[in-house]
Image (cartoon, rainbow, N blue to C red; front, side):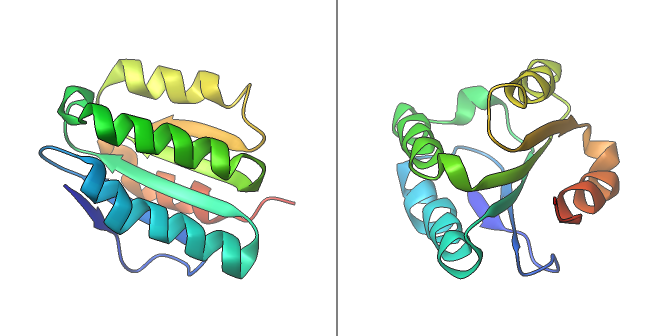
Length: 123
């Protein structure tokens, strides 16, 4: 399940993933949030708190996520992925080399640092 995280700057979309994440979660939470940011600001600052194993994302969810990433490719400014899954955190750090924006992985214990980092506007 994806739930929106409140109390972030209005230009930051924060999402918490728990349990199973499916296509409907992306259709109802992630995609509208990304569209809203690009419509209002023309750029995306994104925080994902991943409290479920990546294996809990259905194939439909992965496909929608890929499509969303490509659709908004030029709008990405910052992406913070917060998880204790080391492989995901390392992938996020590597992704920053190929994406137009910055991507950084954080451990769950570093959530406050992740929020501060993703909330700092890029020039």
